[in-house]
Image 1 (tube, rainbow, N blue to C red):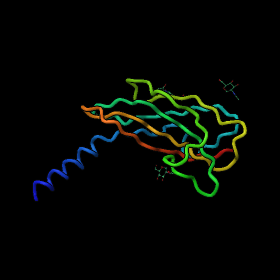
Image 2: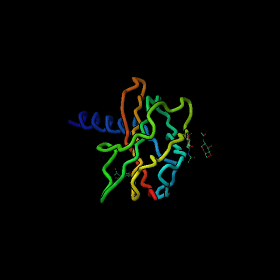
Image 3: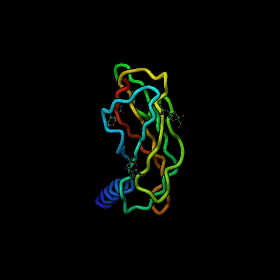
Length: 134
Ligand SMILES: *[C@@H]1O[C@H](CO)[C@@H](O)[C@H](O)[C@H]1NC(C)=O
Ligand SMILES: *[C@@H]1O[C@H](CO)[C@@H](O)[C@H](O)[C@H]1NC(C)=O
Ligand SMILES: *[C@@H]1O[C@H](CO)[C@@H](O)[C@H](O)[C@H]1NC(C)=O
């Protein structure tokens, strides 16, 4: 019984250690963007002791009505999909707000698809940033 608990604890610990996280450095939360505007999305990968390899990044812009749906459900307009430069912990992506995009609150949602650990286990992470289109 004790042994099983120890195994579960170890698995939880490993699961935690083996998560990779990416986040937005730019635009700042709450930034205002105009339809048709070119802007830079800067992403940062957490410095990690664990071996990891980023397979792809997808970034979408969702127009929110009353609430924003999580990026695991709605991506909206795809602004970028493709590779994350290997060997870098930060990267810039030049994207454009579609010229016909609705004004109001919008959610920049992203997916980080990565492989982690010695076995390069496939995994993914959703993250977001709220902005205003005006
Ligand atoms: C945005 O970038 C595109 C492609 O680089 C360019 O054609 C367009 O003129 C730019 N728009 C503005 C408003 O700067
Ligand atoms: C956006 O990310 C934050 C954490 O940074 C989270 O609390 C929030 O639920 C996310 N929003 C959506 C709509 O997924
Ligand atoms: C991304 O752009 C910002 C602002 O222009 C700059 O400070 C940063 O060095 C750039 N990062 C990379 C990896 O090019």
